[in-house]
Image 1 (tube, rainbow, N blue to C red):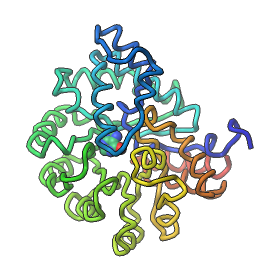
Image 2 (cartoon, helix red, strand yellow):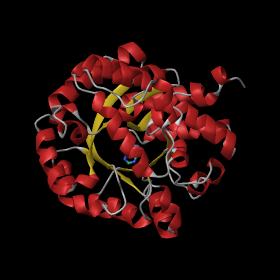
Image 3 (cartoon, rainbow, N blue to C red):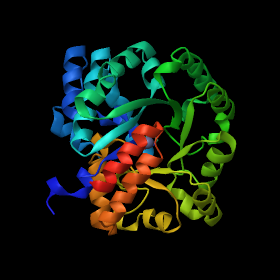
Image 4 (tube, rainbow, N blue to C red):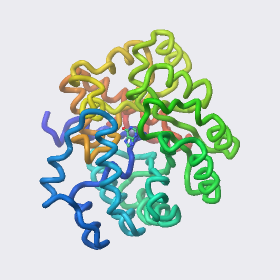
Length: 333
Ligand code: HPA
Ligand SMILES: [Zn+2]
């Protein structure tokens, strides 16, 4: 099967774990730097791409936060979202729930309005232009603590209708989900959907906390759950979806190589798993590339790829009509 006809790329799917700032391709980094008068410490796009060698989550985050310093104006965020949608559409994405990191912008003087206006200028017409329905999830930077997250939630609630949910990301170790109980409980009362990164680098206990203290609807990553058989049983029993990002786990050295990824064990145990790109510009591929990689390295066949696509639709915060439509398209595709 050629790349163009591969089920991994063509099957209709949703993407539920994509950081829009992690879709910043080096070409756009340089274009934004030029129009905003930012001097980059790299000679060109190839030198920047050459820095994409990571030893752990923190080594990636250092480059990720530096890279987004070129985003100043609303039009930069619009171009970023358009760039993601163009690439996602080419890989069969039909719905995307897109993370953004408000604090990573407000703390350097870019207002929440600028970020939201810029993203919405692209996303409000994503369905007409790309066939992709979209929604935004605002993530708190867990390493900046719960007091700052709480203040950011106050600001986000002034824009309640512009987001569907909140998440928790950035440096995981030493920043357990339980620290954010109060923030998540307020967000729940405001009717927001709840997700959290847990069990990427952190222990299975952080996944328990995300479930039992925060009460999340989905777990982002969650792969370290395999260390705790009781937790795997709980995830399977309650059908809590995991948004797994295979290429990310390899690039950030969560696993030595893709062939050793815990995904097959989670699937075997009946856990609802979805496949996602995380930070596609930095980790070597968009969601279809992730599906192709697990097809090649983990032996998942066409039926399994369709099942991941069905899971991605079932786990999305979609209305019944669009969900049924996408499931039908997968079935016949
Ligand atoms: O993979 C990730 N993990 C945690 N925080 C992040 N922020 C962007 N990508 C990531
Ligand atoms: Zn992530």
